[in-house]
Length: 85
Image (cartoon, rainbow, N blue to C red; front, side, top):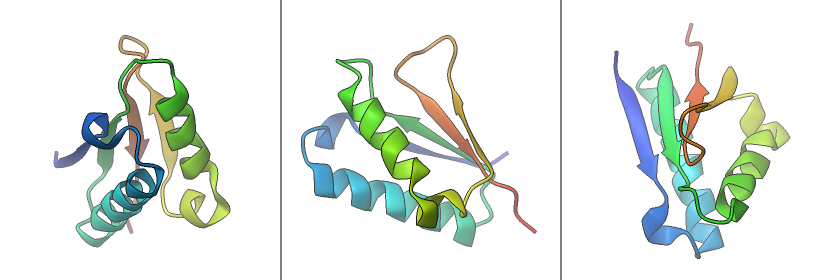
């Protein structure tokens, strides 16, 4: 099963780049009919993960994916799932 991966460690302190990277990978998943995106905000203070979750909760973004899972074994990882027709 194809999966996309986005590691945010490199751009953790550049808010606008984070939004763009998230937007781009969601678009790519939809274009290529990828079912899962793995997003790695890292462990840190949890601020980056909160930012990612806030982004994913935006109305315009929320309608593009099916659901989100937080990795129970790794605090610094999220999965975004898609249902493609």
